[in-house]
Structures are given as structure tokens and as C-alpha cells.
Amino acid sequence: MTSQPLIPLSDATLPLFIGVDVGGTSIKVGVVDDRGATLGFTRVSTEPYQPGEQAVARVGVALAAMLEDREIDRTLIRGVGLGSPGTMDIPTGMLLEPPNLYAWHQFPIRDTMQSVLGLPVTFANDGAAAAYGEFWLGAGREDPSIVMLTLGTGVGGGIIHRGRSIDGEHSHGSECGHVIIDSRPDARVCSCGQPGHLEAYASATAVVARTREALQRGRSSTLEHVTSELTALDVAEAAAAGDALALEIVDETADYLAIGIVSVVHTIDPNMVILGGAMNFGGMASAVGRRFLARIQSQFRAKTFPTLAERTKIDFAALGGDAGYLGAAGLARSAHKDP
Ligand SMILES: [Zn+2]
Image (cartoon, rainbow, N blue to C red; front, side, top):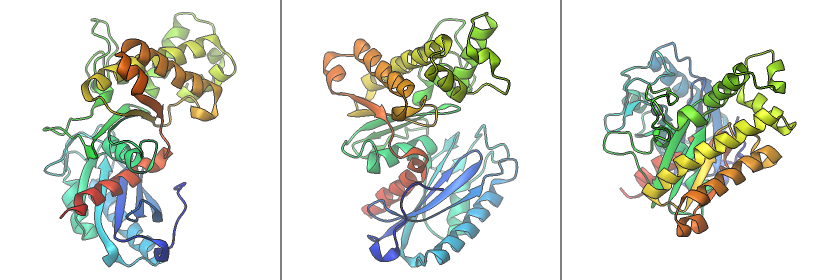
């Protein structure tokens, strides 16, 4: 569910917006007011092997039930924000070949949702939606310009510059996970097929792959004894227990991220870089997570200009899994604010 407290309609600041966050396994749907408070929340399963039309229909049914349950008048809703994994063409509202949404290729998701919900839909990359959420209501709410990296199965990116999401001219703006950090011929290969991208080094998938390779090279570690499929969480737990290999993997991941962050910061010069996603080695709540963040900060400072080393903030995200639907709603709000 959402970790946001639900407010009643009587406490809301009008108008209202709907945020839809499409993930590989579930779709989150929230009704959000003009200040970012959540009035209602629901989720439906994505079923990526079935046509996307069916998922959009499920969203319509679940939303109608939620509006009735929360006693929200549909006429108060001004628009819908929709964040989805790519690849996509934002101007035409098309999903092109999203790698994790197997049956949703060449799917006109924006217009389908517009006709099912009967509301204008603002379409965005999921990384941009999460970044907008942190910009509007989360870790970046004091700052006009932020970059967000979402660390999970892949490395998502979002850039909000002076309140606007940078989507680029070909819907490939803000692809921070695909900046090149290794140009050697034997560089690791990214999920997009290209060698040397940040995602190939610093995603949860990459953390697991790098750990496995070290074990295969004969490094001794408590991780040898993990019987189930190795995960980044196992690495975080082993690091917390002092395992040398796991700690080395955490530190190396921080070093790779710092290299990518330097490139992005030197291009955009934001106030802040926000690290979101589940792959944070425990985040601020854990000593390993704090070590991970401190190492990214120190490695960034060592590789950038003195002014940026002093002024560019790097911190974990604040909204967790809520950033996507909140940010999608925020993008809809921003699209309808100045008619
Ligand atoms: Zn890539």
C-alpha cells in the first residue's frame, strides 16, 4: 500500500489529480490533492504477459471502486499523470518496446488510459515521475533542480530542472543509468545491450553478478553459503555482518555510482542528487547504507570541481515506493496549472 496518510476529501485542497505508477508486477494508483496529500490509494496487478488494454481496464475498475469507497467526486479530478517504464515515445503517448512489459509493445497507453478514465493523461517515464515526486514532496522539495537515480533491477534516471522534467527531444532525456563509466573493450554489458553503462555496474542485478564472479574467482565469503538465488539484500546483510567481500562490493558500487554522478552533475549542475530505489544497502537506517552514501559523497567530491564538491548535495530519497504515483500526479498538476 502507500505509506502516506490518507486525508478525507473535506481536508483536501482542490483540484485533485490521479497518479498512476506502472511497475513490472503492480500498478499503483493514488488520488492526490493540490498540495500533494493522498486521498485514496489502490493497486492492481500488471500481468505483463497479457495485453496492456486489460491492465488499463483493471485500473479503471479499481479507481472507480476507490473513489466510491473514499467518497471522492470524480468531477473534482483535473487530470491523470502516468509513469511507465520505457522504451516510449512521449509526444505520441506510445510504449515502444518496454523490456519488462512483454505483451505491451507498440501500445498506445496514454490514449487508451485517457479513453478508459475519461480524463486528460500526462505521460512520463517512470524515472522522471519518481524524480518529480521527490522534487515536489520528498528529499528535493527545497530545491529547484534535482537529479534522481533509482537503484533497482536497473538504474533509472530523472532530471527536474527548474521545475521541469527533462524528457529530451526523443524521449531519452534523463537516462542517467546509461551514461558510460567504462570504455574498455571488456566492459560489462548493460541490459540495453551496450557495454560500459552505469547500470551494468551499479544496479542490483550488477551487484549480484559482480558478487557471483568474485565467488567464482575463489574469493572466500559467507555469501558462498547462500543456498537460494543470491540477491543484493544478501550482500547488504553479509556486509552488515562484516563480510569482507560484501563490504568491498558495497564500496565498489559506491565508486561506480560516484563516477556516473560526476558526469551527470557536470552536465546539469543540479542542487541535489537523490538516490532512490530499493538497492540502498539498508539506507540511512543501517550502518552499511550510511557507509555506502558517505563513500558516494566522498568519491564524488574527489572527482568534481571545488564549488560543486562544496554545494551539490547527495542524499537518499524520502518517499520510498510512493515517489512514482505522487510524482505522476505532480506532473499532471504541473501540466494543468497554467492552462
Ligand atoms: Zn544501458
